[in-house]
Length: 216
Image (cartoon, rainbow, N blue to C red; front, side, top):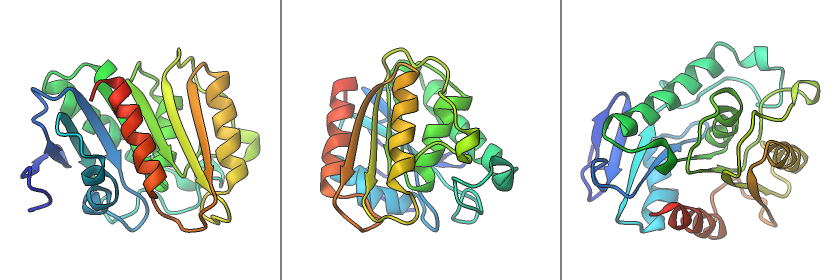
């Protein structure tokens, strides 16, 4: 595919790039947003991180989007696509584990739809990941469906939002941060005065700090 100088390898429906998983200090599962693909995440996050010892596994949505409706709609309105999307992320995690990366050195990172899926993974598939970066996203469901995830035991979690972002309202980002803290995560919340639906330089830097702390 020619996605990066590291010559990505396709594995289990994902693009794998960076340091080989067998020798990587950290493996990052990177999940794209609506109408995007792994290349978008490479260009807007991965390459800018400049972490040569990290490996990256980037799953791809079958048709460019993971689920059809807004993440704050009723959960059932996004099924069965939501469950299928979470299974894709779980398979990407398995790619890293199968190459010898322990779960404590695997970090989940996503933007927009991908960020919402990362948040939902912490709720439905709680494991002792090294950390998570939820870039402009939040937990799924209506206000009545929201709840704190299972115990996260100090997991470092970065969660961000952008003012005036109609796709991901700031109140839902903030409520998600509260619920993750309630679950025991070590949460860093950053709301950016940036109306664009994008990953900005401050978010890239924050993800880099998180990964360095995990061991990248």
